[in-house]
Length: 413
Image: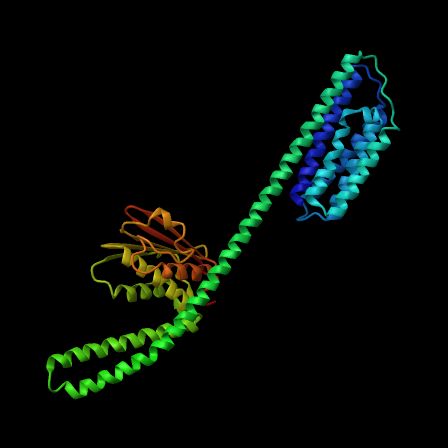
């Protein structure tokens, strides 16, 4: 509203300037007799109140509805008096009555707008019967010409205001629709995450019993046949290790599905946390060169480790490793209370047809390699929960993932 109030004052100055120019032309060029004293007094008071309101506006952060309404009422009264002393309804500047109604419709409640509308109608109607008639020595053609130019001036002001406010209202509606669409997408992502968590928990529960049975049978077979067949004994040992690994994975999956908050609240320096996270992920890689660069200019702040964030960053690193044949570059810095991480691989990139959907929904296609993009989907949702952003830039020479996370929710102090 404060922006509209500022525009109201500017339009008032512009309108008064046009009215003064018209009156000067009438009085000194066309020899039209005008009551200069009341007209000059009204214009002076209007300018005084306008400049006072402008300088007072700089000291305020907001404008009340009643103040805005009072200013619009002042405009209607001022315009009514000026038109009364300059020919009444025959004055082409009477079309300026539409300006207060436009500002009210764009800024004030409906009841105020209708009140001002009826007031302008009443003022217009009154000026049709009561006015100070103009006396001049012009020819009829000159009078008509002047009237047309006055109508042109009023039309320009009115149409410009209508165009501005209608476009502004349309822009606000589009922004509102965009926010609603984002809210619906966020709600859909949350529903998908809940569904994935439920699926993970149920899967872990359902697979637990068969794996336990297989583990028991394998142990019995090992006890019975290991002394008789060395080759079979080796195979059973490998099978038991794989069963143990499956049980460990399922255990972590069940735990992760039910607990996505802090990992025991451990406090670590941010740089050490990132190094440890990357080193643990890197330990499983063999043929990929990892280039790491950390910002050493600013002191590394202490953060409380959040396991859900660790999962998110690890998923992104795993995705990059699956897409990259030989090299991954990781750059990280923390500036202005913000963590920035850039992860670049040298793979074949992501198809443009699915690039816009990566991270926003579960999709599959070239460039995602194995899986259906679940890891990136969950990672982006987790990062956004911390107020951060995840942006993907993909070219033929590789994909870069840029992560930005505010440190305010992670810092230990």
